[in-house]
Image (cartoon, rainbow, N blue to C red; front, side, top):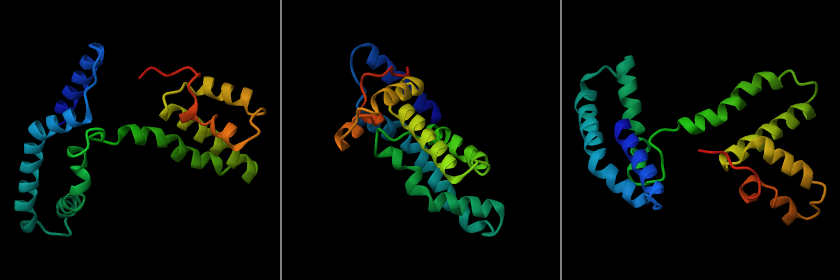
Length: 168
């Protein structure tokens, strides 16, 4: 399945080089043709073996978990914009998980909150394709002049267009 996803990614890049776009509908069609048979066979295999496996064994728990989570596992089959895995999200939230240990030793709760807010801005900038350092400079240069809710909202990463973009 990951090989198929690599092919989709390569096709997307080729299409973009040619000035086009690989639509979510095309991705869904590609997945239905190539990935769905693999998933169908896996589900059948799980359903066939599960009744003969001790439920409290490690294998039984793993199979039961997979069957319970099946709708989430196949979600990408119906939505072309949904990735097959959540690695990008895991990589984005890792600093917060690691930061929890550090924040325990912040001098005070306000310092810990300030650190968390800064991490949030950096992660949001990255998620919106902005280079974090450039984005933070932009925010700090324009924050004092933001005297309305609309002006503050204009500084949010998804509303900023004039800051350096990160190559993806």
